[in-house]
Amino acid sequence: MPGANKIACIFLGAPGSGKGTQAKKLESKLGMPHISTGDMLRQEIDRASQLGLQVKSVLASGALVDDSLMLEVLRARLTQNDTQKGFILDGYPRNLPQAKALENLLTGMGITRVQVLYLSLAQDALVQRLVGRLSCPKCGTVFHKEFNKPKVSDTCDNCGHSPLQHRKDDSEDTAVQRLGIFDVQTKPLIEYYKQKNLLHEVNAAQDMDKVESELLRALKVKGK
Ligand code: AP5
Ligand code: MG
Image (tube, rainbow, N blue to C red; front, side):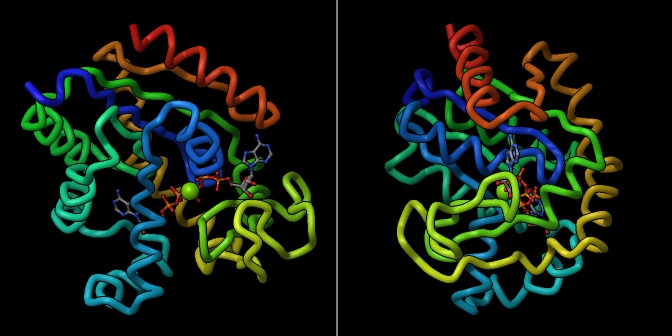
């Protein structure tokens, strides 16, 4: 089966827990692309594509995009050439129907090696990280006004683009709204993957390098 050697690595965690930061750090080390459904949707919004226009107000409100639409976006992405070793999923699945749809999709692709890394962090720290976040609109690298400043003010360390942007859904009100949605819709996935013995929890309150080395260790142990 063509997918037998691929690894589906799922980063689970609340908004602001560091999924995007860590996935970006790990993609070259693991040789697997970072697939962020949020980044993909934001790119569509920037391009003003039909999909972008359809989801723009949903993202601005902090609500979730329709499950069937998200599944089609993901299905198209997972068949691209850069996924030969596998992929790091950031932001999918976000509820039980998405988790079940993903299972069917992976089974259809012959992928049986699945690892779920849960980045855990307390609510007050999550809000602080979200409201201070700066993102590069060109390459998606994220920074923070206090915790992770760019080397040159307002300029991306990775691609040199300036200025950096504050995400529209990172206002305090919308951030709190997104965290509420995480609690209700996404948190049940922690138990779901625990029951399947696929979940590894990492303390995301540590500094970024420590979180990265714990993730790498977990991936090596579970990847055997
Ligand atoms: P998405 O883009 O996926 O947002 P999210 O899940 O809310 O997660 P974030 O990107 O906000 O946080 P993160 O965990 O990536 O944290 P980051 O690394 O940036 O989704 C956006 C929207 O798209 C959704 O609301 C929804 O509308 C839609 N959508 C997406 N997927 C969907 C799906 N499957 N179904 C339906 N709708 C979907 O870090 C945060 C900050 O903390 C940064 O400033 C960073 O520098 C800093 N930081 C990171 N690590 C550390 C550390 N260790 N110490 C100190 N600071 C740190
Ligand atoms: Mg992110």
